[in-house]
Image 1 (cartoon, rainbow, N blue to C red):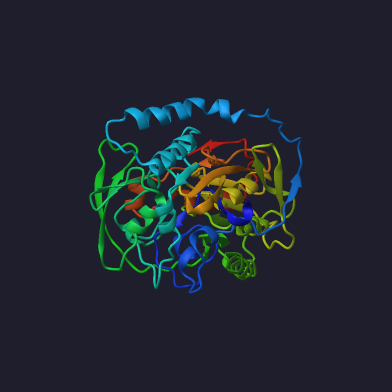
Image 2: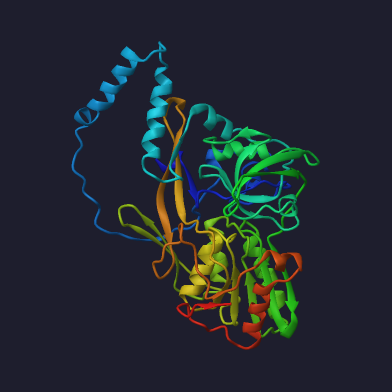
Length: 430
C-alpha cells in the first residue's frame, strides 16, 4: 500500500515562496514543484529516508465485521434518497463521495480527509517555472489554511501575519471546506501582484482583510554569527536536503572560535524532512533515542542519534516559539529530554502526526489518513500539545516594534552565566 501512497509528516507545512529550483524534500511548496523533472505531488514528499529500529508489540486482534448487516441502514438511507428526495435524479457519484467524506470527518481528526478526483488531480499538477508568493509557512491540513510562521523579511511578515492566523477567504471568495493544497495555489501568484486574505485570528473578534504584495523569495537554511560574551548563535531556518551540510559547515566555523556556549534558534522554523531532523539533532545529542514514531497498533519505530555530531558537548540553549513546528519540535524535544540544553521562549506549534495519502482505485480521488504520531525520547507526544520551554519568555508586540528580542537576551544571559544545565522539570517564567 505504501508504494502507491504519499507519507506526510506533521500534516505538511508548506511555504508560499519562490524557490529557485534547488529545493529539498521537506515541507514547503517549492520542494514539490521546483525541479524540471518534478514528480506529481503524491510522489514528492518522501517522509522516511532512514531505516528505523522497530520495536514490535502484540498486534491487535479485531473481531470480524458483518459488513452486510452493518451497512443495512446506509443502503436503506440510500434507497430513501432515490425514492423520495425532491430533486431527481440524484448523482450517485456525489452521494458516494459525500459518504466517504462524512465517514472520515466522523473520526474527528482534522488531518484525515478525502480529496475527490478533481481536487486530487489539481493537487498533482506540477507548477511550472518560478514560484512566487507571500513568504509564509503554512499548515494546509485543517479546516482553513493556517499560518505557521511568516518568513523573515517576507511580504507576509511585513503585513503582520502571525502564527495561528487562519485564511478564511481569498480575494473575497470563501475558502471553507476547500482543500488546503488548492487554497495554496490561490495564494501563489506573480511577484508584484496583490492578493487579499481574509484572516481569522484568535483574540480578535471579527475577521479582517490583509492585502499582501507577492514577491520573489529565496531562503537559506542557516544564518549564524558570534554574539557578545563570545557566544555562538545559529539560526536554523528550515530542514531541507542541504540544511545538515550547511549546519555542519557553520558549526565548524563557529567552534574554531572557541565559543563559551551556543544558541540554536528554531523560532518560526516550520520543520521539514524527517531525515534532516534526525541529522540535525545528532549534531547536538551524541547518542540515544532522538524520537519514536508510534502507530495505532502500538508498534514503534525508533530513531537514534547518528555518530559524529560536532556540538555534543558545548553548553547549549535552544530558542523556540509558537512557529517552531514538526522537525523543529523533534530536535528541541530530543535536546530537552536528554538534558542536553534548555529551551527558552514560548510553547511550540504542536505538529507531530504522520499522514498517508492513499489514491483510490479507478481515479476516484484519494484518502488521507493519520497513521502515526511522533514521541520524544521520554515518550511525550508533540501533537497538539507542543513543547513547553524550560524558561518561558514572551515576545510582545511592543518588543517587536522596539526591535527588542527578550528571548535571545535571556538565552545569552543563561550561557554567559553558565546556567545551561537547567533540567526540563524546572520551568521558569520570565
